[in-house]
Length: 389
Length: 196
Image 1 (tube, each protein chain N blue to C red):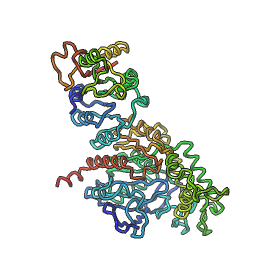
Image 2 (image 1 turned 90 degrees about the vertical axis):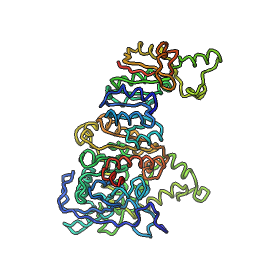
Image 3 (image 1 turned 120 degrees about the vertical axis):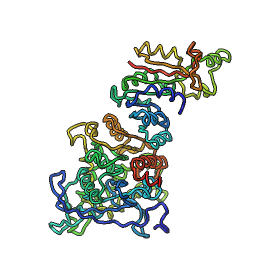
Image 4 (image 1 turned 135 degrees about the horizontal axis):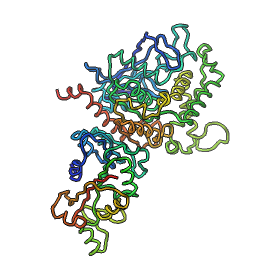
């Protein structure tokens, strides 16, 4: 609980639910007749509607990007370190939009929401959504706010993939594209980890083929295992060694199967916490969206060719110990952008925290982030005028 | 602007696609972008330099040149520039070859080890030259591959590299008429414009 709201926080924020009634054609062939998105915004949209930044979330993220919902909140939004007054994404200058993606479990249309056609939860019947579908729904969200062009679309991990897809699908609707700790497509190893996570969930007896809401049960064990596995891939070997080493909880080995090493109890805690806060069907959907992401193959071409159509300027960032989406994967994006003759900058941040590093306020990372945002500001004429007045 | 950059900026024609290897804080690229409508990138490994480039609006890519430039296709750039860095490379000859593969022409600058002061230092003191301009001692210098103008030009002949233009300046980056009488003895910094 924050005793007082920090000065560089966006403060107490309130999500809003926005309804869309125009049918949305999905990549899988199905149509969502109507849907809603949970959204949070910070800062003010200027008159020219030119200062908007879209934040795309990763696998387990949501619309609550910064600030607090109440004074009882233990933690602020998931990217509070980067967003707020005077922070890298300065809400005194920019209008920031965070949303929960379609298929999510934090209030946007998704498996745990009521299907208006059946008046029951969608459950496993919620259609498979892809990064393309998310970009389409986000474009409609931009229309709702009257934003024809974002100053920047920003995301880390799966969020970075959405930002990249934005630059391809809507070249004229963003000036800057920030792709952090992402990849141009998943590797076989990435997909393999996702499949183990999905199996853990779907083999849980309480999963009931996804209809667990009706049974008033939750596949807690499956979700916990999925998260424990995922969490290992978010950390680095070095990071785990320095954080846990081989530390024992009680100081001595007990020669049984209770959790004795610190790392065991940490993973169990993380897994259990997640299993009560996240939806199993959503986890399945999000991992599928990751697996399917492949903008080059979708267009039947190579990455440089598909990026030819992009008009945004790019900032690509990776972290040295990230092995989920390693620096090599970011370099693939950068090489393709260079070959496509696009404006791109790239930095590889020294960090021990693995994939998780993109959410951590590492000084060099935040400096670079701020420096790039100054460039975004410089490309937003209305923000220039404001300063000269 | 750093004086050697001042000299080479005139060798880049307007609107060209430029790659600056070891671009530092992006000063040259910033100038070329603003004054010559050049596009392109700098390669750099120093974190502070990278942030400085980004702040200026110069496209910078974190990349260690020693790991190779293989990911860049042939003739991607009009001009590839490397200032005051060739002598710190593991294999200067390979870097020059790579620069000429990815660029149509290249600009290279390096300190001349054949300068009379360096020669005198070694001849009379019997020690590796240390000066204000070359402040390192032999065991901690990053400059592992010093060469003279003659050495560089010999490399160019061996590799069929055509020297389009060259100039020599003193350590204040000033052209002095007398340097040109005996450049390998009197010039401290060499600036070459080369192509295949």
